[in-house]
Structure formats: structure tokens, C-alpha cells
Image 1 (cartoon, helix red, strand yellow):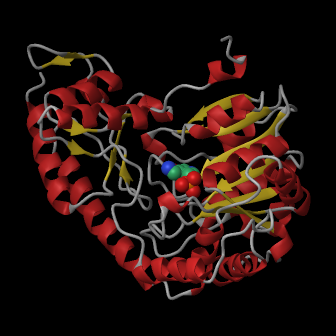
Image 2 (tube, protein in one colour):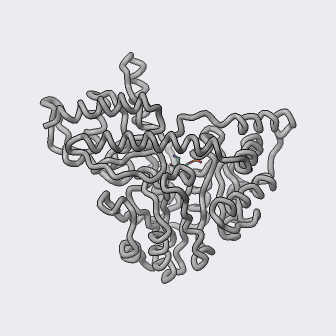
Image 3 (cartoon, helix red, strand yellow):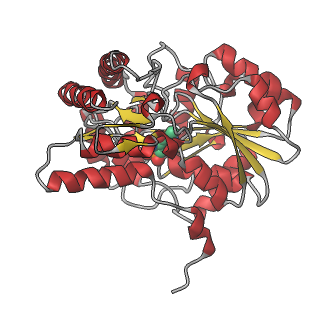
Length: 396
Ligand code: PMP
């Protein structure tokens, strides 16, 4: 069978590959601490589960409106006002089968073949694959550890060309945990104002997992709001990855375009997950705050431990649940058996010799770093840091 050419742009995500390798080693009886996964280790809070059970018992088993139940669109509208001071009426909101689907629908609605899309790196690799699937050309802009992995207004301005159609970013960021402040966003907005033909996709899926006290959305800037698409969802803040419920708020024409796409692809998101999400969004956020407090404690521990390892450079992530240390000082070193030439070698070395699973930074556009998820227990993290420190100390 001759497969379609578009498949050539898609490779297996490194995150999935590493998780698979670590599962295989575990199956051989090797004790592995897996820090490769990008999902909360918590259970969905009980009141959300109960809302889903109630929805099943009440017979919410039919197709829903393509954009989502009106009560859910209303709940999201309330949430955006309550948490972000953003005014989006329900007709400017559409729910989907996860933020990932919202992202690809937005990209498919905005990007034509040949259009340029600016992505600051490090970035969540799915963005680039989605742009390529739409025929767009990704313009990567390197934002290294010395600038806390965040893009400056000057870098943005230098990257924009007459062909630029879109800018895509996440804050809090996967993989770096970097969080843009209001002032930093304002700096980017000043540039966007000069280029009214550039749309912005703001991925805010880690909004709640934020250690700076509050989330700032780029959609708060009225001057550019008519071309901002806000992406969010239930996966991270409510520990609901498997429920597959995401949403988008944006300009009416883009939301309508996504409705059109969704009507011909999924027909809309799962009915029970939608009912449960109404409860999640309108309830007290105490369970979310408890999870965030646990992530913060783990973050403090992991960054403290990384900073004590000679040769490792680690920034403090202000959100999400990842550390993204720079390990490039080890390149060229060896434990007498394995030479570490790059981040991929380092990730494989830590897996094979240290029995800790990480993901190489090049999977996110920064080959100097590794991504370590702290969405796992403190016990696992302590064991992982002990193993990692020992494995690194053997390199000279
Ligand atoms: N954006 C980012 C930055 C993510 O890390 C993820 C999940 N790993 C998603 C979007 C997708 O989330 P969802 O489960 O809602 O599809």
C-alpha cells in the first residue's frame, strides 16, 4: 500500500518512544523511574467523576451540538471571565476532543500551504507537526536558557516576514515551565500591533499549574484580541487527560471555521465528558489548588536537587510540571564505556545506566537540555534524583 505523502512529516513523538522503552525495561524486571510522561499522576477529583456518573444515569448518550452543549459553552464563558477577565460570549467558544484537537483545528483554519508560522523554541513538538500537516513552513526562533526560554520583542520582530501568518506559543510552557508576565506579553503585543496580518495561538492548557500566583493571557490585550485564539482544556488542571475535553475561545470566524471542520471530523466531544466538565469548571477549584501545591513542592525539590549536581544548569520553572535542565557541559564525556555526544545520548545513558527515563531536549527544539516531568510522587522523584546524580558523577 502506497501511503499518503503527508505521513512523511509525522514522526513518533520522543515522549511516547521513551515511555515505550522504559515499559520494555520494566517488563524485563528492571526498576525504572519514569520522568518522561506529560500527564498528572492524580486521579480526577471525585465531584467530577460523580457528575459523569450522574450524566450517564440521566441518559446523556446522544450526539451533542457540534460546538458543545450550550451549558458547557456558558460555563467556559463564565470561567474565562472569572479566572482571566476575558469576555467571550458562548458563540465564540467551541469544545473539542482535547486541546490537541483545538490546536489542529485552529491551525487548519488559519494556515495555507506556504504560510510561515513562528514558533519560539523550546516548544511542544506537536505544534510543528500540525503546521507541516497544513502545508505551513515553521520558522523556529531559538530562545535559550539564558533568556529563561522566552521570546523577546526584538526576536519576534526579526522573525516576522510578509509571509508570516501565525505565531504559536504556550505559557506556562511545555517543556520549560516558563511563564510570560503581563509586561513580557505587552512587549510582544507592541510588535504584533505593527503586523495586523499575524494571528496568535495562545496555548494556555497549563494555566492553573502556575507557581507565580496568577495566569496572564495574551488575549487580555484589546488591541490584538480579534486575532488571538485561546486554547485550553481539562487535561492538566483537573487531571482529566483521558476524558479528552479541550476548548478554544477566539474570533467568531475562526470558531465557525473550527465548527465546520469538527462537523466533518469528530461531530463534537464526548457527551459525558462535557457534562462532567460543566461541574469541574463551575465548582470550587480547591482540588486543583491542592494538586498545584503538590507540583510546587516537587518542583522545589527537583530544581534544588538538580542545582546540586555539578555540570547541570537548571532554571526555576514557574509553571507546568517539567524541569528542563541544560546538560550540555557533559557532551564529550564518558563513563569509560558510553560517550555522551548529545542530549539523545544523555537521555539513553540515564535510562540504560541510571534507570531514569527522561526526554531529550531536541524533541522540543533545544539539544542542550533534557525534560524531566515531576508529575510523579516525591518518593519517585527522590529516587530519580539520587540515581541521576550518581550516573552523572561517573562521567568525566
Ligand atoms: N498543549 C500542550 C503544551 C500540552 O503539553 C498538551 C498535552 N501534553 C496539550 C496541549 C494537549 O492537551 P489535551 O490532552 O487537552 O489534548
